[in-house]
Image (cartoon, rainbow, N blue to C red; front, side):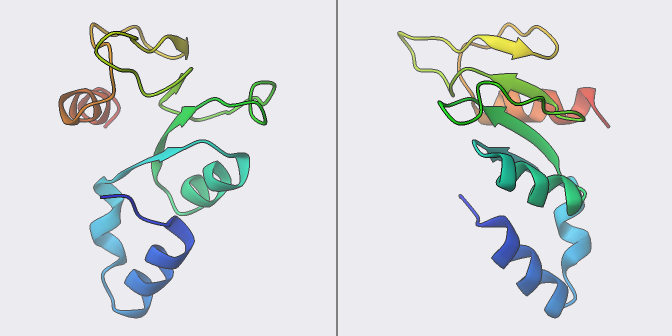
Length: 100
């Protein structure tokens, strides 16, 4: 499920469910999305693009060149090395557990 962070968090806060998002990880490809996620207290994975290649993302879980595919694995630009080759539920769980 892909959620728009600002809208989803505003709805969660309004409905009293904001605490449920503390255990979420955001996947972002923009500086403003990263800022929204981190200001909401979410751990974040960044994928780079032409607009974010030169940005310095502090307090990010990992920076990847892309999400990866079976025949085209991602490269970790910044962060802990992994045995995974593409972003999957298992990889996200591993990132979460390693950064609790």
